[in-house]
Image 1: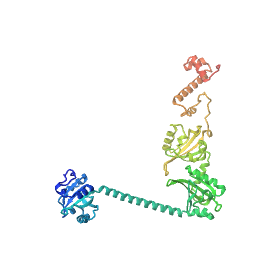
Image 2: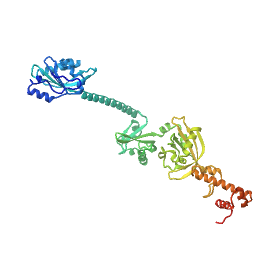
Image 3: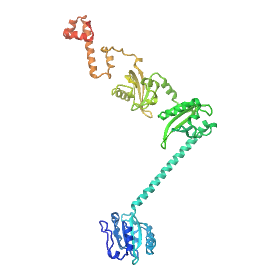
Image 4: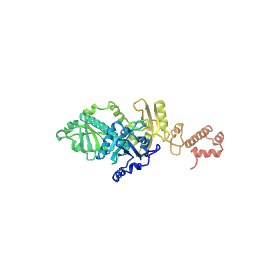
Length: 472
């Protein structure tokens, strides 16, 4: 009798004294069936021989089943299956695969599918089993996946129900428009009551048909602007009652389709939901000085029309999100000064710098700014005015030297430090020569002696700075 070695599976095969008596037909069935484990069971249900061809099953202790009743090697709920299989095999019934569970020494169980065949001699039965754990695991994963899908579907269904309820009960008129053909695909009851009227349901109608002929171009333009990502409001006259409404539109995607969400409100409704700070916003939008608000990274979040005029940006939507450094300050100089001063002191006033527009132009400006760290989102506020509005520094002609420290300070950031030091040296040298000439009543020989220069060096410098009368 063969037993599985404790270190691995036994070679597939049965002892000759047991297999030799099998007929050719039975042997063919055994060979055709094949499996991970095969057992010869006597008429009393005792396992008399077995062969294991699966290493995993061998490690689970199947070699210990020899000389044990088959029913003693299975779990309690599988015993009746074993008894039915033995009876069917003994009665030459139709063999069928049955799933049997076996306990393991580790306290778990393994699932094996068996087929029992009558051996035709002394009531013996051949049971061939296939390890079913991989299939069972896949089935378990499938069940878990199905349960997860059901949970997700329930959440989506609940969310859709809430959306539908909100959409239907909302007092605000809301219309959903297909971005491809500009036809209305959904409209809530408020929209039907507000603009449907005698024209019938809104769904299926062209969006522009809702408006008077004179307002249809504005409605089409509104959708075109919303398709570019801009959030805009416009006023148009509806055909239903000839009333004027504020219409806003925004673009969104659903199921790989682009749609417009259009909201309509009467003038009274628009005034009721108006931002309480709108008056302040309107005032800032009309002041002559440029005003801009940025986040902590200096990205623009709000601006007025004067800022657009200075920077030559076509619209507020195009300015939003851009860095203020794109327009304001000398590169790598003013940003650090501005940010550090604002964080340290909270505000600055009349900071001299330059502003660049989108066409490459540049002008001198003065900046006053404030840092607001205690708001819901920390931000910076800047007011920018042209330096020409204050007391301008007299511009010097090409080739002239600065006449004061104030003029030199305005060169910081516009020229390199090397050039600035050279200009400073020239300024000091010129002022000293002028003072020496004044002390000596324009006696150049005495002035050269006072300055410790030779006459030739003094004449060269006088010519260089344009002091005195020299022929061209």
